[in-house]
Amino acid sequence: MSYNFYNFLNLLKLESIKQEKKINLIASENYASLSSIIYSSSCFINKYSEGYPSNRYYSGCKIFDIFENKAIIESQLLFSSNFSNVQPHSGVQANFASFQSLLNKNDKILSLDLKSGGHLSHGFKKNFSGLIFKIINYCLDNNNCINNKYIELLIKKEKPKLLIVGYSCYQSNIDWSYLRYISKKNNCYLLSDISHISGFVCSGLIKNPINNSDIVTSTTHKTLRGIKGGIILSNNNLFFKKINSSVFPGQQGGCISNFIISKYITFKESNNFNFINYNKQILINSKIMLKIFFYRGYFALNYDTINHMFLIHLKNNFSLKIEKILEKNGIFLNKNFFPNDVKNSINPSAIRIGLAALTTRKIKKKEVEFIANIICDIIENNNIFYKDKINFLCKKFPIYN
Ligand SMILES: *Cc1c(COP(=O)(O)O)cnc(C)c1O
Image 1 (cartoon, rainbow, N blue to C red):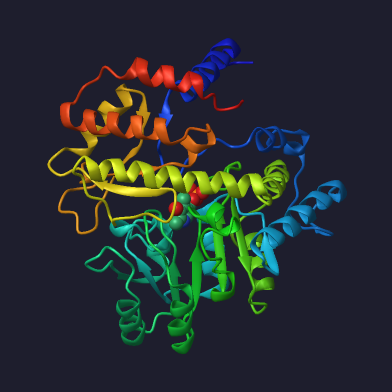
Image 2 (cartoon, helix red, strand yellow):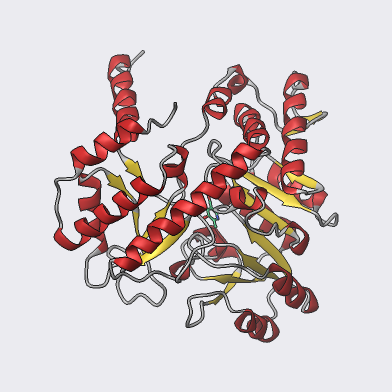
């Protein structure tokens, strides 16, 4: 071995201590369940499984086939879908395979722009999606909401082939049935990217867009609490075959066998009352924290949130500096654009806050209020003396208990 194994173990220990001792409010992160971690690291890492169950490129896949079939069935149960592909390595991979199933090169996509809460893979100019498709962006209205009328006008004017609905930073309801109605009327496909909110969707807290979409994509590592991965769902049988061939051989080679077994565990764990209650608690915590920011004089994207996250405007403070000072105090979150932001990407005007990871630690009202007030104090006074208080709080709420 050429590397220093003890050094490696030491770094592993440092990371685990960091995670235990600090508060994580990064909206796209969570703590994967212990069983999903255990099942993600098995001897299946040695098994190549290009292709699909009963139709593989290599021999010796019979045992793995059982697991992939279980993962497919379990995800279909969870999201009421007739079709599922569990192989995408990530959310972006799931999106690219979906584009490949629905579109040709240079086709037009209508999506929310990155600065207003869209995702890189929805056509950002430096992303592959922005290079091979023509991108038209819609923006939020004066209330910072998705406006069906704006979208309808743009669909009629621009005649895109695909409308993408689903965002990395958004607090309000989405009227999927109307968007489906206007896109269908204008021969436009609809892709719903529920990467952030999939836990809420399968808990019934947010309406499932499966029957109002041609394709639904998601990650498995955000509110779903699994390991890093992606998934594609559909109830439009025109695309089932196309999606499979777009994932393999279109976008990927062999799937990560042990991660698919772990996804199976995640889908199973997400299909019960504990998981629904967990998501209900995330929503309660998210609303409580947002309220404290309002009491303290801040404004957010909207006056309420229907999911785990919200966006806080920092007024005259510099978000990069605030992100760094919060980190010194033991609180992680990310700086973010606010819609119509005049500042640049290195120092945008807002911070995005997500409550999924915090809620996994079983933290509730009292502590959520405490943390929110500390964050406001830090923004206002740039103090760096909360580290021990945060550490003390974290000790009472271990990640894996
Ligand atoms: C997080 C996210 C993704 C991509 O996830 P990766 O797993 O990092 O590729 C895609 N779409 C949206 C809306 C997201 O928020």
